[in-house]
Image 1: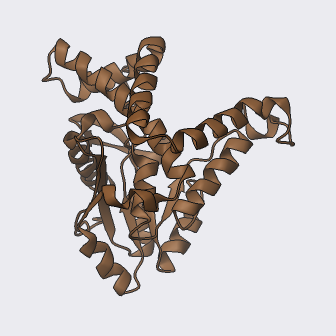
Image 2: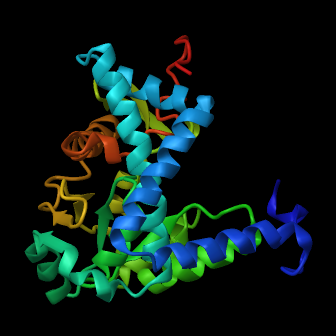
Amino acid sequence: MSRKDYPRSFAHPRYWPVWLAIGAMYAAAWLPWRLKLWLGKAIGLLVWRLVPRRRHIVETNLRLCFPELDDEQHHRQVRETFIANGIGILETATGWCRDPEHLRHRVVFKGQEHMARLQAEGKGALIIGVHFSTLDLGGALHSLFFRADAVYRPHNNPLFERFMTRARNRIFGTAIDRHDLRGVVRRIKAGHCVWYSPDQDFGRHASVFAPFFGIEAATIKLTAKIARMTGAPVIPLIFHRNPDDRTYTLEYLPPLEDFPSGDEVADAARVNAFIEGAIRKHPEQYLWLHRRFKTRPEGEPGFY
């Protein structure tokens, strides 16, 4: 359903399930930590069992990207992916609905000097993130140390879009629609850092094909384009939940050198190489539920 098809008043009964979901997220954000983990695991396992379409997508992605694993290892990896993404729902609720200050003691931050140097010089930057299940909580934890704008995809439901945008505007400096290229460029040129995650398949028109886990994947060209238009450094950012399930690590890597190079495929391959390396650290926390290899080169059959 497109946004124009929704009622104008948020009091309309069609929005009642959304109000209920928002209320549930607020309530979940205040649960004790162990209960959040338990509930998130339960949600993930429930989806794993009851939504075969998503399970098929995850299974396909993981078999393509980790062909060296046997059937038992694949089965375990699929299950762990749903558990991690179930926990991610509770992490998102926490990031959107609570002051991140209460989680400062749970953060290990590495590579802060790369961002501190840019901010001391008054320069903007393009921060390259990854669609981990910890994405929005990672943004909240990041805001404890540095401010950054964020590029996002608007939600079709107007009420949930308002809730989500307000939450992200609190976490980040400004939430920027992914179609607003001028807005991204303007903010970076004004000395702001913009967080952007270029690891999803947006179709042939927006992409070039570059290797990702050894597979030709439609990869967004916009990363190099923004860097070229702004002259800003591109800084990779890794974030994940640690094995203790109680702490998180955020790590800035040094800015990409000689980027962009002028070769769209080579630039896309460099970005994919960073993303792949980040995923391999904690593959179960990646958002394998989306069809990363949906668009195929001409003549190739689809995977899904």
